[in-house]
Length: 270
Image (cartoon, rainbow, N blue to C red):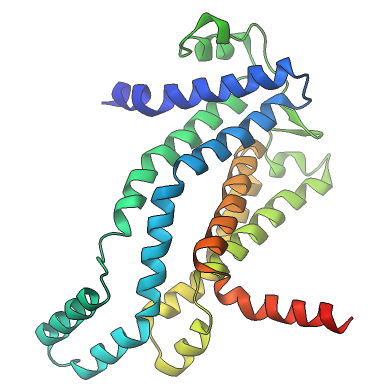
């Protein structure tokens, strides 16, 4: 089973990353491995674009139905059967399949897990034995790596974690901070405008959990970014930036909209 997973996901992603690496070396691009991680992440994000678009659109539709669903819950709070029937009728009227948002996530999951494992192996391959192990998974001898690669990226080791590098390089603390900010922006965009006010008015448990995760999840990601190799933060930030762009194009700025509106007004005022 594990070997099938390698053949379907790990090996193809490893080969694609090495292709980018060889291409950037040929172009004499500095920090070739770091830019290869960015290129691979961008490539995967573009490949998953249709699936993630379907997920975002489904989530957006579900969020717009939030007030109507709350009314149904309040109306049939003592009759679960009627509540379920009214909910399904509402979904049918708006042409929404509640399960449609889960399928894209299930398909994306093995790809993202594989990408994480590939990058973990790549950034830690700093010995001839580790490079040879990577070569054994490559499809063509033309892709074989004949020496350990430079794991530096603008002065930061892709294999080093900010927690270990902080003593000699204090500015590396910016990595988890930037990671948390990017994740917060994406999380904020995924929350509908006015959701926080609705929580105060209706005390909706699901919305309350969503609002709390808006702050908790970026803090968790920042902690992981501080503890894990920098190469993984590079991948995560690239993935998040593409996610921010996709979310904006498909569903707008969400809860960031009031802030963006104030910024535009201030720019006009100046």
